[in-house]
Image (cartoon, rainbow, N blue to C red):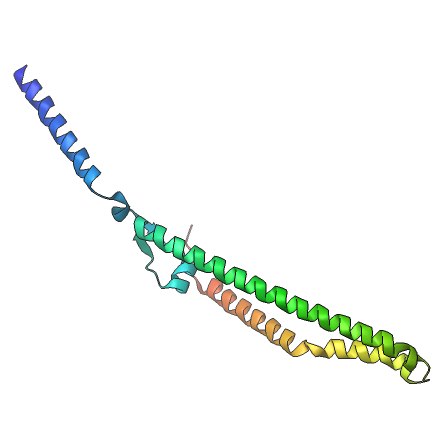
Length: 153
C-alpha cells in the first residue's frame, strides 16, 4: 500500500512540475504557422514562423494593405473626377459647336464619326499591353501547371 502511495505521489509531483514548466513558457514561440506563398513573396518571411511572430507580422501586413488600398482607392476616385470633368467639358463643347457645324454640309455628319474614331484609338495602346501581359501570364501559369508531375493513383 505504501508503494502505491509513493508512486501516486511521484506521478502527481511530476505532473504538477510539468504543468508549471509549461506555464512558464510561451507556447506561441513553440507553435509554428505556415506562411502563404503570396505573403512570403511580398514580405520575405520564412515559410514557417512562430505563432507570436505570425500575429505581429500579420498586423503589420494588414495595416500596410489597408493603407495601400485606401491610397489606391483615393487615386482611382481622383482619376474618375478628372475623367468626369473632361467628359463634361467635351460634351459641353460639342453642344456649343454642334449646331454651328451642323449647318456645314460635310462637317455635320463627320463630327460624330470623328468623335467615335477618336474614342476607339484613344486608349487602345494601353489596353493592348494589358491584354498581352494577361495572356503571357496565363501561358506561364499553364506551363507551370502542366510541368508539375501527377501523383500516381
